[in-house]
Length: 137
Image (cartoon, rainbow, N blue to C red):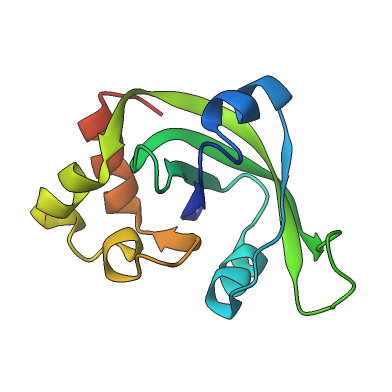
């Protein structure tokens, strides 16, 4: 299994809305590195759900339920979408400040490539986020 981080501004699409929807299409990504990460996702992979701009914290975990396909918001074949379902809300959100202050997380994509909307997460980083959030997978 691989681990990922997906970002959404809560006023556009929040964890709460995602939880109500029970499934979403992750589309509209227009960055090649982020697109490549979407293309690398496999069914069953887990992604940390990060509220960007407002809150700036990881609030939940999503599961990949459909691997990449043509992004329905464009006819340009370069862009793809992936489908997610909510897997679990974190018991305690983990803030960007907490992540930056943690030596184990200092090389996380979220810190090193802050503008990347879809990033990779190493297994030990995923486990550390769960520990900080007091959540069990």
